[in-house]
Image (tube, rainbow, N blue to C red; front, side, top):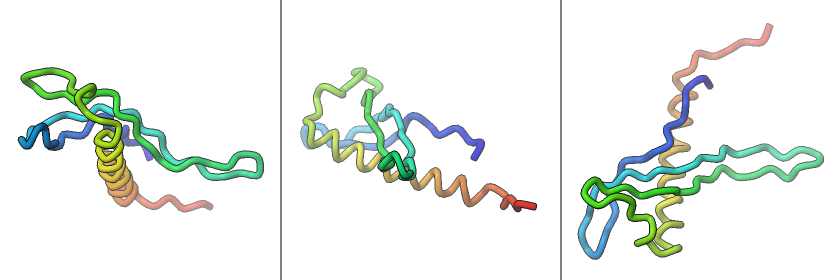
Length: 95
């Protein structure tokens, strides 16, 4: 795939009972297959910032559990994006 994976997700989060729009900035690690000498890894994301336009980075306001849930949601969206991009690629045939 030649498409660059976005490093952010625009979404909403609950902050003290109020839904706000934020931009989640993350690092994505694609899954790696197992080999005879390496056990492989699952795909993952690590959130590096949660930006809110009027305040700035809200990362430190989230608990570890809230960040884990946000990482799970972000990973779902990234993997869906990757799958959609793969479907749009023309099939390549080996000759």
